[in-house]
Image 1: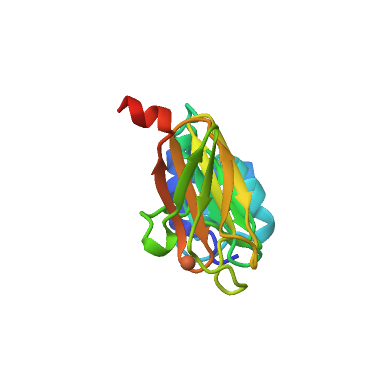
Image 2: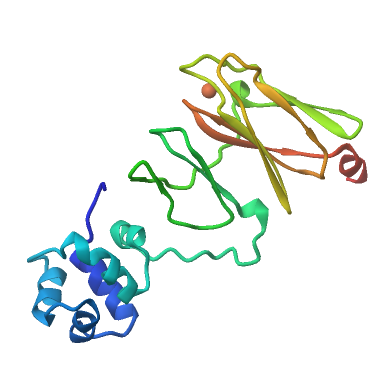
Length: 203
Ligand SMILES: [Fe+2]
């Protein structure tokens, strides 16, 4: 846990629910003095109260701890608005189709911001009939490598795990034009647009 719930977060979330301190106190089964103490920074809720406090304020415990309610605005579930989250401790890769609070190994994982690739992280994409081959001229040793790449279209995300000492590339079946994501363990996430030859001809 890298931070603890603060009084201003409790107050903001309580007011957003249109609740008085006494009403919140009743739901969490503490005195209204206790709620007042938390909100004015003269005390903190016991860790055993985080779950009921989150329930009363309609947020998850991670949201309570990070200080904001996270509402996913991508209700249409457009895959192209998806996010990747990578745990720096264990290397876990998590995928969400919109905003979410995601944690692993006890730390919160923000959504990675994908950048335009520099020459080292730019993939060469060669189309051969109904497939395309992706290759990068990037190191693949234990300290600097590409843990995964992903091919994203409007309705599908295909994630390919890559390994140190393996090849810095992969092949995919064309499902349409979309985005290629490449994640480097030292330099972060990159994405480049890829156009299916049939779509390219139409342009
Ligand atoms: Fe790199």
